[in-house]
Length: 174
Length: 138
Image: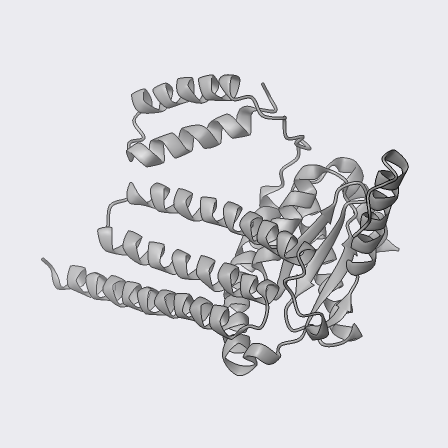
């Protein structure tokens, strides 16, 4: 039940938003439906870490929005200026975390920020294979890899498990 | 209506006008990218990024113009669902495109996935050979 709670809250919010009515009665009915839906259409549980750092999440979201804007402008520029001549690369990036949620979240964020797109995921080693737009040489490859690792670090700080966080702190400290 | 109200209205109108024009420009960017980029993967970049931002700006403009608070949750949910689904579809198309070789190798400066895919394909072939033996590879 505790694991399901975020899902149920999300379903109730969607219900209220679709009816455009956040009165208690409507929300209660929505909650009943959410429980019924979650029971009837059972999905494999998402393993949450039980941690969520809102103080880290807000700046991350703002930076994320900024980078989405930057990404769009970059793609616009490349489309107009380089077009067919653009050089790309497929880069393997091993991630620190092995949790499905973290790999998925990193993949999502990566797909939306400048010049990267997840082509393939190796779940056993939690490696992301990323297609980078406008990656011309080894230096760009290193930059792309660092960006992905930094994104993952940001996500670990928001909602990683305690162990992941400790490992990250050690890595940064070393 | 008081003059102050009018001033606020003008500001809101101006902001939503800017949002709409920039949002439309972003959709245009996606279209130009689809036409100009050489292969499937780089086209997926064009199809994901400017499109998400363009939708965000247009939804924000709609929200500003309707001026009722209850449209904001719907718009937000619409955008979040877009954020969640766009990378997934891009990944699926990109993955299928890589495997079916819909890309220009000569435009890649590095390819660290190729060796892995070749190895996996070889392993699968070996397994098949062990199982049946008479199936030809390739």
